[in-house]
Length: 277
Image 1 (cartoon, one colour):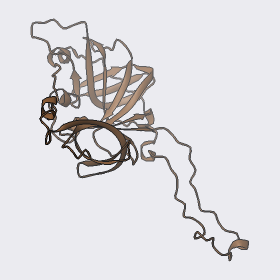
Image 2 (image 1 turned 180 degrees about the vertical axis):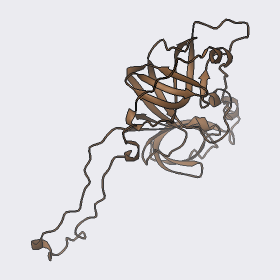
Image 3 (image 1 turned 60 degrees about the horizontal axis):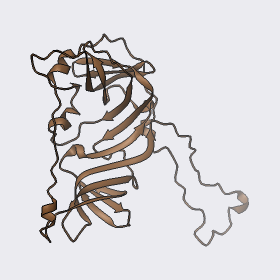
Image 4 (image 1 turned 60 degrees about the vertical axis):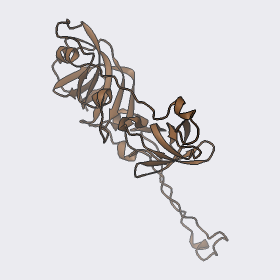
């Protein structure tokens, strides 16, 4: 997929008009609550492996072997599936996000190091979390009388137009943005759902529970990871059942029931490894 010619974006207005909005998460459980004895929420953090997911609830096998029911966070952006990807995974129009330093004329001052593939989470987002999924050029808010800086650190969110060895181009709202990419740039996936997750993927959970039952947890943050690389070609061959020869056609089956049924083996991300346009 080749980059088309795009005029230099003018993003000074976006840099000067749009600012960072901070937000915070307050745990329902506090140290003071915990000191009040039974019935107070207790904070917990643990790691484990994903077993299943159903109706807003994860079943996680904790490192000690205990199954834990984990209710998803109220903040949809706090529930994340993270994986590495290669360029063949990318498609034109995918929503991506990256950060960099740009001049007032819209020129990047350094190559982009990380590009994140995202999808708007379902649920209500506010403040900084909402900004991170809204197409546009997001930077520090400045007063009307403050001069436009020569350079500014901004976050670009937009639909992918193209990506090749010359750089990346996205449509950030009504602003086309083009920037060079580092030769070692990282492409990562950060989805707020489990469409790409598989059983036994590592899970990290922080949240709280009602003592004494620590197997039912209300999550404040959940991160699911994997060592699978999406868009990477995997050289695998299908496994086929062995054909019996005529000599063994009438032979009696083994005590264990004879030939075992063999399933095919394929890439875990076969649907995502089609070459980019």
